[in-house]
Length: 78
View 1 (cartoon, helix red, strand yellow):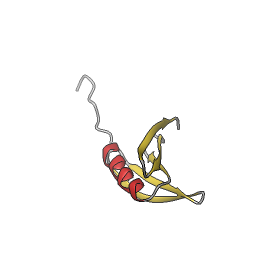
View 2 (view 1 turned 90 degrees about the vertical axis):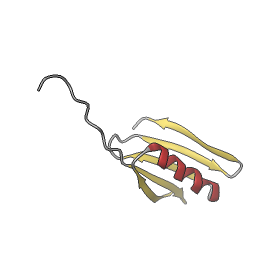
View 3 (view 1 turned 45 degrees about the vertical axis):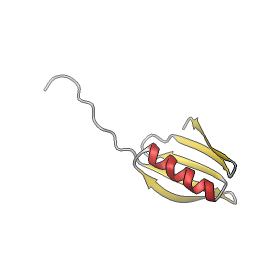
């Protein structure tokens, strides 16, 4: 077979919240949209520092929450 085939990459994202300098695992998601939705829902109820970690690339997306503001997402290098 000639040519290149694009393989579909499986995404595994872990959501963590930092509590008293300890990371608390909150769940695993298969899309950034579902992880961000969960983060938004959780941060509305419990402000704190949240991290979305991509198991396949090592990338982390950080969001700080505040009850009055929606979470801000910042891309960080692994």
